[in-house]
Image (cartoon, rainbow, N blue to C red; front, top):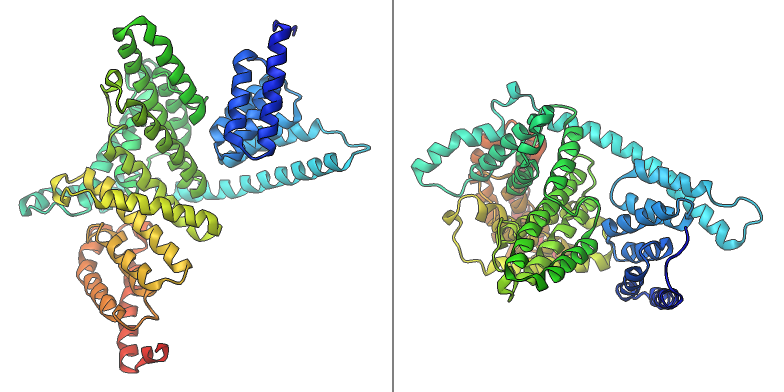
Amino acid sequence: MVSTLSDDDHSKVATLNSEGNTLFKNADYVAAAAKYTAALDIDQKNAILYSNRAACWLSLNLYLDALSDATKATELDSSFVKALGRLARALDALGRPFQSALSWEQALNRLPRKSLRLPERTQLYEYKNSLAAAKHEQVRQQKALQMSVKQNMVRKSEDKGLPWMIAKGLIPLLVARGDYTSCAWTLNKAYDDLCEGMRHLASTADRSTQAASPRVLELFSSSVLLDYRAWHFRNSDYLQQFDRKAIQETKFYGAFAPKYGLEGTKRIVSARLENAKPEGEVKYKKEWEDLQLSLTATVRYWIMEGFHQGTLYQNPAVGADYLDQAIALIKWVRLQIHGNDLLNVVNGTIFEDTYLKGVQALRLHFLIEKFHDLDPRTQQAMYEEADGIANETMSFQTPRNSDTVFTASTWYTARGYALTIKALYYQTRGLYAFAGLSYKLSAECFAEDDGKYIVALLRCIKSTEYIRSPSVDIQNEALEKIRKAIPKLKYVWKARKEVDDIDKTVAEALQWEETLKGRLKTNYYDQFY
C-alpha cells in the first residue's frame, strides 16, 4: 500500500513513536500510550503504532484495549510477530485460551528457526511456553465449564424447593410481619429478573423478534448484581445463546464492546461530544442521549463477561478484571457529568451510586476467592481499595428496611465484602484482633438467613482463636448469633448446599462451640500470656 502521508507527517510520526519508545522503556506507560495515540491521529494505518500502544495497555493491565489495538495491528500486517504475540497475551489475560493458542501458533510459525541470536531464542522459548500454557488452560477451562453447567443447569420441573422459590413463597409472610431484612427479597427479585431475561433470550430463536427484545444484557446483569446465587439456566447451550444475543444487543445499542476497551471507549465518547459542541445545545444533548445507551450496553456486556469468567469458567481473577473495566468506565462518565449542565440529564441506572456499588460488590466477591494467591503488593492495594469502599458505605445512613432490594444488594453487600477483604489482609499481617472485628462488622451487613452471615461469624471466631480477651466474649457472641440464625438459614438454603455448603458451615460452627467450651475449662488461653 502506497503511503499518502507527507514527508512532514512521516517525520512527526517517527518522532512521536521514538518518544513513545523512550517513555515505554522508562515504564511510563500512560505517557507512552499518549505519544502513540498522537502518532495514530496522523497515521491510522501504522501497524507498529497499534502494536506499541497494545504493549502499553498490557503493561497497564488494560487487556481489552490491548486486544483491540493488537487485533488492528494484525489486520494491517498479518505477519507482524510482535503484534501476534501481544494479541495472544491479551486473549490469555481475558480468559480466551482457545483463541490465544491460535495466535501463539501463528506467531511461532513466523519466527525463524535457524542461526538464532539470544533475543530470538528467548522469544521462541517464551512463545512455546505460552502456547503450552494456553493449551493447559483450555483443558482446565473445559473441565470447569462441564462442572459449572452441571451445577447451574436447573430444569423448570426441578425448581420446587430451591432457594429462589422458597424466597418467592416467603415474601407475603415477610410483608405481613413487616420484615424487610431477609435475603429472600433480593433473591426473589434476582430470580424474577433472571426469568424475564431467559424469556427474552428464548425469543431470539425466532429471528423476526431478535431486534424487538433488546433487554437480555439489562435483565441478566441486574439479576447477578442483585444476588448471583439465584443465577441458573435451563439448557446446556445457554452460553452459545447468550453470546449470539449479546452481540446483537451491542450492535442494536451501538455499544463500544466488544470491539473497544476502556481507553478506546473514552476516546470515542470524548471525540463525539467534542464534535457535537459546535452544532448547538440540542445536537449536543441528543448525542449524549445516544451515547448513554451505548455506554450502558457496554457496561452491562462487561459485567456479564466478567460474571461468566468468574463463575462458569471458574476464573475469578479474569472476572474481576472485566468488572474493573466496568467500574472505571462508570466512574469516568460520572466525572464527565459532574459540573456539566449539558450532560446532567442522565437516563438509566448504571451511573447511580447504587449501581456502582453493586458492580464493586461483585468484583470484591471474586477477589475474596483469590486474595491469598495475590502477592503482598497487590494485597496492599486491595486493602486500600476495600478500605475506601468500606468508608464510603459506612457513611450511608439509609436503614436496611428503607429499600428492601437495592440497599441490601448494593451498599450493604459492598460493605460486607470490603470488610472481608480488610479482615483477610489483617490475617496475613498477624493482626488477628482487627481481623475478628472486621469479620464481625461484615456479618452485620448480611441478613441472618444468608449463608454469608454465618460464614463471616465463623471466620470471626477462627481469626481470634489465639487471643484470650476480649476475644472469648466476641466468640461467644458470634456463636450465639450462629445458633439463632441456623434455622432461618437452613430453611431458605436447604436445597442448595453447593452454593454456600450450608451443612459443612453449620457443623463447623457447632464444633467450634464445643472447642471453645473445652479450652475455657482447661485454661488453654493462659499459655499465650
